[in-house]
Image 1 (tube, one colour):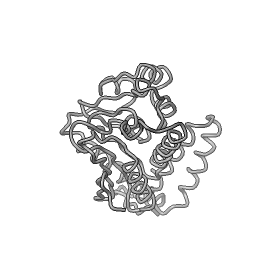
Image 2 (cartoon, one colour):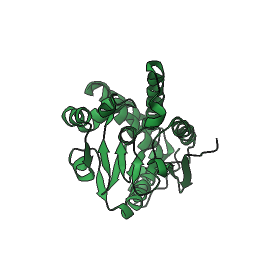
Image 3 (tube, one colour):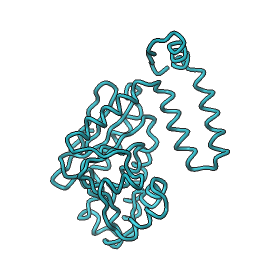
Length: 260
């Protein structure tokens, strides 16, 4: 697929996906979500990619929601289908084997906030704004916001954001756990890349199994979660990376991981 609304680059095992509709504040229309689905599936199948960064083009917006002009004329069936399509793509992002970092460079509203919540780690620029303004348009969040935002920040904060349709700034977002760190705009992408490199130097299989255990465990009881953890912990001992990592530790040298 030739991308018209997304930029995609891979360097040193780090993939960068940029939503590229700056004139529309990177709003998500059908074409953009379709392209996002395609690129995410490519990333999932590429074992050379160890970490993913998702960001928005320009200095104003990460993703300022779904494209309202495109949504305005939908009927109930079409609205449900659109919501399910977006949910499915965001679930693919959440379930990518590789860790995903959101570099939030401006507005993260509606679908943009929902996209960030589908990522593993969120870094924000100082000018970032977060919100779920859907109720002011006569709709609910539709790309997973009622579920993922609640899991990230807790019921009280999620309900306040969703019920009021208001916005919060980056520092407030950090205070409630919606973002990990806040940076000046010009430092955001270097910080995200630095984090990605720090993750990428570790054993890829171990990182990916850790992600799987966290994601699965958070949706079940703790006994089931730790049972799954025991399984992936044991599975690691069948890998060459485990042998290399422990040998390197005992020999007081840096490990060289191959993802095997």
